[in-house]
Image 1 (cartoon, rainbow, N blue to C red):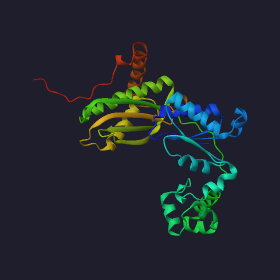
Image 2: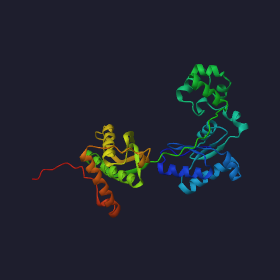
Image 3: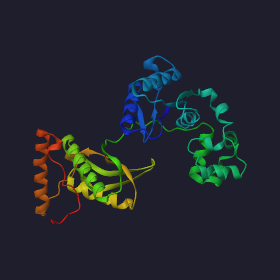
Image 4: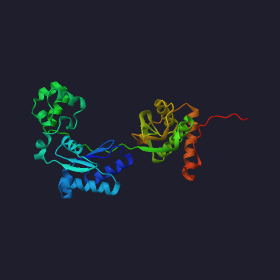
Length: 324
């Protein structure tokens, strides 16, 4: 089963969809940001139903519990299932292709509809008169390899014939933590934006330390007036949950955006590829200033845990004004 969620689905909701899939089968492979694979062999025996009915059950559960419709393709192989899910029109639906129907269903489809065929590969094939998947299936594999390259050609020729031995490999979505700030009005002031980012860093660091986790990468997303957005991901030199390290990388990401007069509506900061904090290397530091900040960080964490996050905030980044 190949499952497609709506585009731009929030990560929290995507994780909930994955939980629904795990309720159907123990073998679920997350395909971030909005797709997944499910092995159905054992699930069909366990639930005592057919694949199409299981797909409908999943779709109903997703709509009723999450308000999210899904496009679900079901077939004997990953390629055919993914091709099927892409052919569903509208916000959702289930398309099941039985093993004996694969060839008849695939053959009339345009060659670019075959999952795994990119626009450039499709253009090359069309230049040589190979317009449909059925034509690709009857062309000699050696010829396809000459057109697309040895490995890509072999894979394309096999998949056009419905051959795809890849198994569904169980893979959970990597753990992450997200904090957000929404501006009450369109913001141009760089100091205000930097202060909001610093507040997010403090929130994120506190959240990670409470969970006993460390981040290996940060993603900064900037949302602009008009609905556009910009995002960039960078890895930390080493896993960390300390404000110092997160702030340094967050500021680098903000500088990389090269903002001039952009009107911001919101900021999202996400810690990615989280690991257990116990697995993060603890470097012996001769930087007494940093060691002092880490001690202060622990103290502030205890105060926030006792009195609430709002009792201590980051120093505001505001322009200095001389007294008159």
